[in-house]
Length: 146
Ligand SMILES: [Zn+2]
Image (cartoon, rainbow, N blue to C red; front, side, top):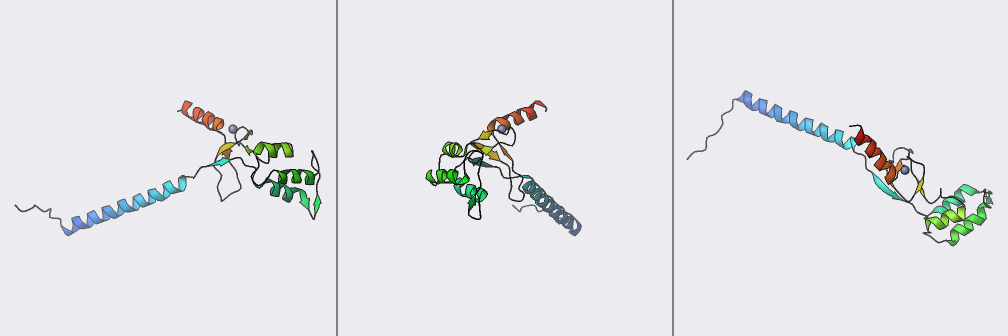
């Protein structure tokens, strides 16, 4: 039994081709728009790694150490070096006298935290890190206003 074939006029064929091209272009544009909107979110974890070297960069200039509120910069640097390559974050905080060098700072509550969702990107120095409590508060507020 022969398969019936739709007969299209050249005008109808052209219309179909134009329609398909338009659809492909619309989908491509939508794909670009979606990709531009989706920002990768990573998780940052507090770490004591590299703190000693950052400390030296901040407090040693031309071979001379700056004094900090707690102690001389050099005494603290040596204490940080004694903690090893990957020191415990609380040990770093004790050596320095505050948590700002080894903990993360939440952009929402300004607390020092050990883990945070990181919305920062490589194209700006604007840093956005949010702790779980702030993310949950924000989600709750958004949900309540729907
Ligand atoms: Zn927070």
